[in-house]
Length: 331
Image (cartoon, rainbow, N blue to C red):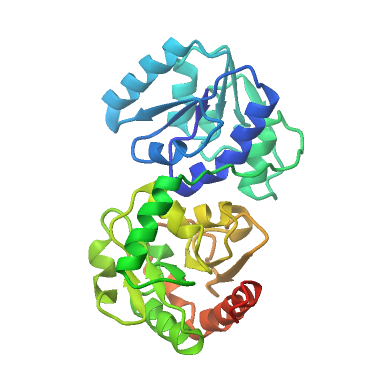
């Protein structure tokens, strides 16, 4: 059994660790407990055998717990490191419960519900830390993320790209984020898209999620920007896997793009990119100059990511776009 309830990007970062589990215990089923809404991502992961979607509140917690008890799991891996996830793992009645040592867990009390506490190298990226937990403290190579895009989702995306007038290379912009401190200004994204189109004749496609329709509304109707329709997780993946470059803050779709092997330009402030950045070789990170960067605050009076100059982002992006166009023979 695996517990990693949320968020989307964190679940993505857990995929290699779960793949290590599947390769280490090929005869065992992988049952993953995850927050409802994020469970749709795991449907695109072939090495997850069963998904338990947890609804909010005590009732959702209890229902998920009742379901996993029926599985009679022999091992549980808590990759979340919270009191809630540790307690869930303990109450699941699984005999072997593995996770972060209390001193390294996000909430130390969560680690005390486990009976196999793993010390990891805290200087590593979180993907590598989670792989260490799956390998019981050993440093092993990180396997591919294993996300699979269906042909059906590719066909649907091809259809709406045609409607939007996109028939060639395109950029993906991600103005949304779960924390206000992780958002770069929408008007700066618009300026960036205009510069890309003027220089390379490459349009930009804006992806957005639940509750972000109003955020991206100012980008509609601009010739150099197309706003995608509401997409499923599978359709979002199909959009991202074809993108020339993906630009955004520390948000789930950025990590999915990196997991799919696409070049990403990450704009970081409240979170540390060395720990929580896009995992891959084709990522460039721009950080705020604030002395408090890496504070992990959801709200702040300071501008945070919004303070990254658009000219600095453009300088990095134009090199990335040119390199990708050259690789595709369209430069």
